[in-house]
Image (tube, rainbow, N blue to C red; front, side, top):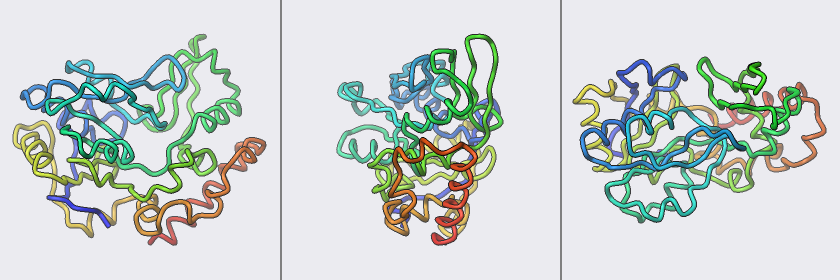
Length: 285
């Protein structure tokens, strides 16, 4: 169910500044450790962008450039030809579909847990119902400090919207509903949310073990070992839906996602999304 692994952990960054988005800051900490100790020379990751979809791939080669990639961007960002020149001294931060695509490449793979990715149509739907024209956006933070979506307009106005992960039930990428990998089985180290400012960590390979334990030993992170039962008990419903029930293709409401949802009022899709979440969580466990 969890795939092959060396060890399981609950962990967070020692540097509190890396935990401002409620995540544990583990991926950023591991990249900084790898760069500063000479284990890697660069990392392919995603940073914020002033252009739609307000996220873009980048190759980070300095600590500041790595820090610029911190925080989740709840959309799929293809890496394209940027991955072509990467080698053993490079790291790549990827979703399960990306680390799987690079599984035969000699790269350090830091993987993210992944449920459903919100397509651009879903974000457009949300912004439209919030009364936001994309042309007026200065910047967009998919996971703002304190949680939720933060839209900064060129006028200086800020618009915040709380939890919106349920939108992906109606506006996901087609490939996401067939995916059965939540915990990133092809990564050297896989990381996902556990509780505020703490992450679940699955160390899967010897290379990942050396990186993680080195960061722990040198004070970049703090961690507590977990059993498989402990780790699974802290995972969210997408894990059960993807890895125990064979993907979201088995959930009718998600399977029939499409443009029909664009005509629904936002409170209606939110209510339906809450019902689907309850359905998948209950059946998963």
